[in-house]
Image 1 (cartoon, rainbow, N blue to C red):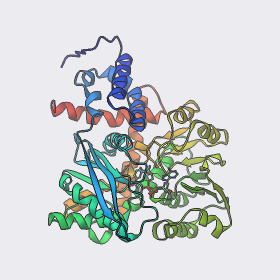
Image 2 (tube, helix red, strand yellow; image 1 turned 60 degrees about the vertical axis):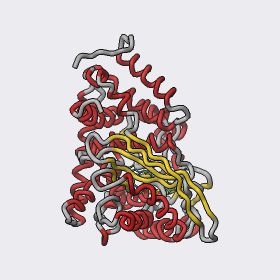
Image 3 (cartoon, protein in one colour; image 1 turned 90 degrees about the horizontal axis):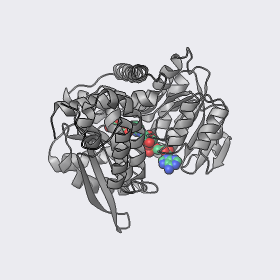
Image 4 (cartoon, protein in one colour; image 1 turned 180 degrees about the vertical axis):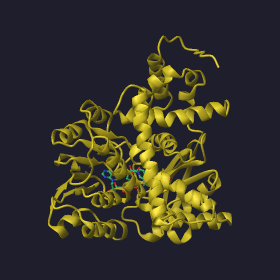
Length: 457
Ligand SMILES: NC(=O)C1=CN([C@@H]2O[C@H](COP(=O)(O)OP(=O)(O)OC[C@H]3O[C@@H](n4cnc5c(N)ncnc54)[C@H](O)[C@@H]3O)[C@@H](O)[C@H]2O)C=CC1
Ligand SMILES: O=C(O)CCC(=O)C(=O)O
């Protein structure tokens, strides 16, 4: 099809700028969504210059507008019988290459702009995995902190009472994200079965006894660590003997620590929304077991680690002031700002592998790129979680379950493949070592081509 642009523009860069201005005007106030789209479209310019058909097919406009957004009310009762109302969403972003797939977040900060940024990132991330999955994200402003198991169960059941109509094993397959782990997936799955009178792989991150996959809980942290190791290998180096800073202390952080230890590195930090612990001796297997119990069962604060193991605790601080070789931001979006990025680099950090989604602000990313450190953006580095969800879907669809070694081997292979895609794409577009460009173009092309193949829908 001919390159027929309706707008009078002389260059692709100018087109992209006009596109972005319109996106902001059409989606006011959705700051995280603007940020995620801006980063992607800016790096797409050389690809769009080479492929004008993406512009004439209006792929930018279509890929940034969710297929549909479901917004609903969740009404539930606390243990005292008091009634609460939360806002909830499922953003079904794009299913060009497979069923909608992506996590559910339960956190008071959840709003549409955050879920749209996460859904948009998920489209490109899932494409990078090579597993056929579209992108989606959902969640609610419900705060699980301080709630009893019964309250969490009642919330999850009320949430699923609406969501069940919109999802299915071949339609849309949610999973965990911040505030949603094995406990919540269990309550959601139980309610889905009850409402639909069917057993299907409609959620991933399920318990092992009822359709879950080995290694899914570990997969995001393991994957981010495999990605860091791959990046280091390009410089003839490895994680062995490296000092690492990890933020967060939830699912992704926990299994990052485990895998870094496995590779012979030493993790010296963990954090939560209250503060950071710094344990210069390293968080070994025994201390990690304590963290898992603290965070997954007792649901306590990370400060208790410092009390127990007599290390330093920094109230209200993030970990990025420490001296380290490798950083794994694994808590939440925009948790590394420009000053913190500069501090990391100044203190000798030369690898950043993002376990969280968009944890670095745009000017922090600029610091990493300018200093030519090994910087693995979230949509590549943390793709192991959703990739292993894809493996869980494959096992469910074939009524089979694979062993630990098989799933881990597949995860490792997928992470190596994603790394190679980033490296090869960055080389092809003349910017070697730029994993941001490599991941964005690498993920985009497959979705864009699929959308063109499938016509104007
Ligand atoms: N669970 C998964 O499979 C995947 C998760 N991610 C991303 O990884 C990040 C962490 O997710 P999970 O470990 O699953 O969640 P989680 O709920 O298990 O843990 C989240 C951690 O981040 C901390 N945190 C949350 N909000 C914070 C804030 N505003 N300031 C400081 N700390 C904060 C919490 O205290 C907790 O330690 C998120 O960005 C998520 O989107 C990305 C890919 C897959
Ligand atoms: O496993 C999934 O489907 C969700 C993973 C996820 O939410 C993410 O990659 O950010």
